[in-house]
Length: 145
Image (cartoon, rainbow, N blue to C red):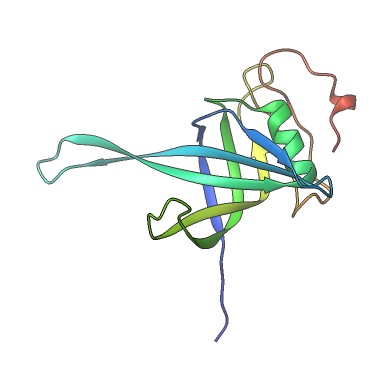
């Protein structure tokens, strides 16, 4: 039987992107997104729920995201789910986490308000499209994709 693992999200960053580097120089970005969903209750009242998701990006994608988006920025992300489990160092037992590994992304919004087109392909691969930065004018020739 074939398997399929694909996630598509459109939301806003909940915190600043945190980038760390491996000893080999690979950038790893960790960040969170909030995705809102509007609906109505059984009584017909409008309600909104929010789903908070942790994401990880690697390589050039991690560096580009850190440079061009910040807390509150809208972002479109394509990726895959990855499950991790470990033993808590403080004796708290077994811990686990489900996160999205970013495979492609696109900035959202008009130039100067945090978006435009843009994206990336798989861990540090070449990106396709143009891009814009959050807050201010951008020299599009400086963007690495």
